[in-house]
Image 1 (cartoon, each protein chain N blue to C red):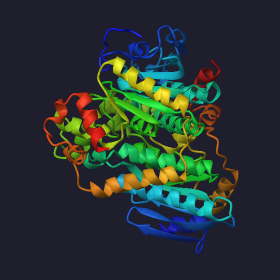
Image 2 (image 1 turned 120 degrees about the horizontal axis):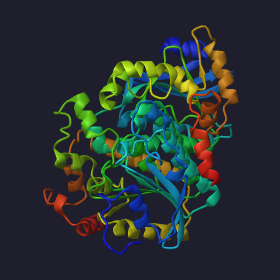
Image 3 (image 1 turned 180 degrees about the horizontal axis):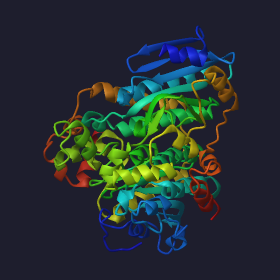
Image 4 (image 1 turned 135 degrees about the vertical axis):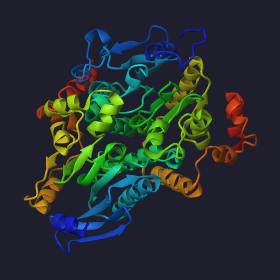
Length: 238
Length: 299
């Protein structure tokens, strides 16, 4: 992880503690302190990981409201294979834990914290919904894997031949895995390449982040999700 | 409202709306006649629906103005695609200008529609943000759950974002369905054919006992209507207070304590036991009224 931290923040510019699949701390980006909350090792998000994330968000909101400084940007560094699949977590109501994380993101946003996600590994399905997709802006590093389900599994469930899915995936971004597809649909703002200066990209991202949800409009502009914005507008204006 | 008893579980999405709201009060927005279907299903030669599996509109319930959405579980398992999700999200945004007493979401969905999985996942995250924004503006959102698909996947998360969750005994809430867990982790982890076990993990009674659902009602739509109108009455008198650091800290402590207390639990029997039920085998058959009374004595 330290290599990613160094490239994102510069060496010596971060103070992050890793505990298993979870890490948190602070880093300096563009001369300003940001709060870092992340997962690694392709973490399966379970109730305790969700509690860790929520706890770090609430702590940040609490700290920044008790002293007179402008609310810090919260940076989610995402790597998740999805939600934990277990009877135990279902019994606890894992969906409720994920909803709680979303509530905490919403509070932070209303308290003028900007929320920025950087996907440094996988961002999959329910795990991504809980951790990452609720940010104001989402960026993907070169190796980022973003998906709901791979095409073989999708073929099995939908009974659509795998070969047909592969062909259709060439022309439509709506079901096939890939950060590029999420970019076209407006859910990933930028794809950062190996050659990019991530520190500079991040500093610029943090300055330009606003709290509005413009993803549907972005998806329409980029041609990957052309119905979401007009249908929602149709309902609003009816 | 129809006076004869209609079973919520068996009713269609449209019937649920008509039995829930005041007679002749429902106006559909973006009705099937406009044929906003999913182009993604069509491209995969899968059947489409003229309302993409969700009905949205305005109505009144006992005179209270509401916006209402109802998912059709019989179309693709109520799953959320691009159009379906945009209708729900648009309805939440509409609440900001129309200021209804509440937005009612009749959830009957397994979550993301796999045929357009990326679009569905993004749509649900947009819906999540929209639900939170609506509540932050002081407008409550109610989830009503009692259909065959329950509230799973992303819609299970949406359900738990809602201000109130009204559920029937057959209603289920969760994240990953038992079949998915069994397929990936094996039958020893979760036997999806053990209906009693499935019910003790995800069913209406265990969710109510744990406080994840705020009302447990009978299968009759009239019971959903009564509970909804009582809740509307409550919010018409006292405006919803948006969540703040104090309220979320309380919610956080409760969830953290639950995870700690039940760190090895794998069966809902313990939840019934801890909420004061002595006859653990009898809970399943217990009439709703008695069940609620029992919880009332404990709470």
